[in-house]
Length: 638
Image (cartoon, rainbow, N blue to C red):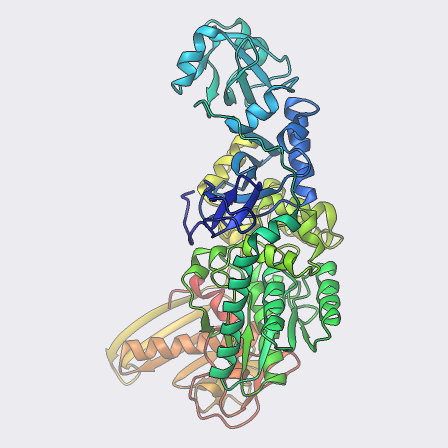
């Protein structure tokens, strides 16, 4: 995966005080010059919580012997993590102003520690396993970035296996390089040819270890000028935006760190805005509690909207499992309830302060600081922290001494739904082990995969996270399992529901211009269709309920559809609109988006479905984005 720079690298370090410094070239405590820390883009650095530090130490001890973890990460030092591109998950480890190592989550084996020269030298004096000893004659070649060949191996710990991360040392136990074993210890010692270790980090470095112990309070003190500047700019933005827009204002609070920082900034701006929380029904129990506790702690008004109980599990029959490129659940479980909350509490619109940051993704990097979203009519979004990175957010929260969501202390770096398809496998493994909610989802996946005869790996490696798993993922699963992972049949995972069309051109009494005939793979409930078809035009229904006509399109109960007109584009457009209405009728998820767009209030919710109950002037404004339509759109070629 290519690295993407989403903003300036703000991470610097004061080596005198041994603390990270955001932005400033001079330390505000000692006056020393700070140095930029080399990290992999996008550089959204975050604190390592005790859970993270314990994980890293355990990996070091398991791979290189007891005491390696403490040598790598001594107590009393600030440790940071930086997410780096990887097939699943990888974090760079930063301590004492240097990126010293990485941890990576591999499919089938879990987390491993990947040493660089700094970490290898820290561990070298205490390591009791995971090492390979090279002949002095091989040192020069290794320094030139050449691999360690079998004839150059003097010794190796007997537990070293092919594929292990190892430290290469000379006969005096001086660290020479890090690498990946290509042979087991017994083989590389006896073998007379071949690559024993594929080297990675080989260039000599000066060991950078500080004796100065520090705390996060020391770090906050060093960064206070930066935090004050950031706070004041954000507070000014909040107040000027409120003055600019003649709308009631709220804070959109999800229970995550970014929305918490946004809430705290509105308080620093002198505002006590209502807090709007959308309970998707897929939240961690701890997230819901954190939201209520935070609102209570700051004596704020809470506007809470909860998705219907069946908004997710009830819609799985229509859409199948959500995926990274098929996140219908965001529309049904979050945006739908958001629209309902806005309609009920702010019918004339609302200004929402949202914790959106450009460092989160390429799509968010390109978004403006103030925006509107066609999926949430009536809402104007504004982000006070658009240009902050994760460490800005965390330092501000620490500075304000605010409580955060406990899941950050359990190993997650972002908080969302407990089974979000955007999660990497490492995050899902963390959730499985610590959440009592994942069992229901796992039971559904097992039943779903069994009914469609999907391979066991589809669930084991969370391949449901893609509509069609990428080639790189399939290859990795094949490597781990030894099975050939052929391309999954997408239609075995998603429901097959296609509309087949045939166009006829002519000038006979039956075809004046163009006629488009279609056939659905199912029957149509004409009675239900009649409740929405009036959006297109005057509706005529057969007395026996066998067909319905609206806007020159006729739909028959058995699933055939006919549209006629003078121009092919117009005929196809009418057909498309009718198919949208059929889809909305059959698969309405109750999100109320179409109701919010209707300028005349002709639409309303009835029995959980959108229904046309008043006269319609056919403006078509309600036919905007719709989960039922948009997440099936690519399956139809209209």
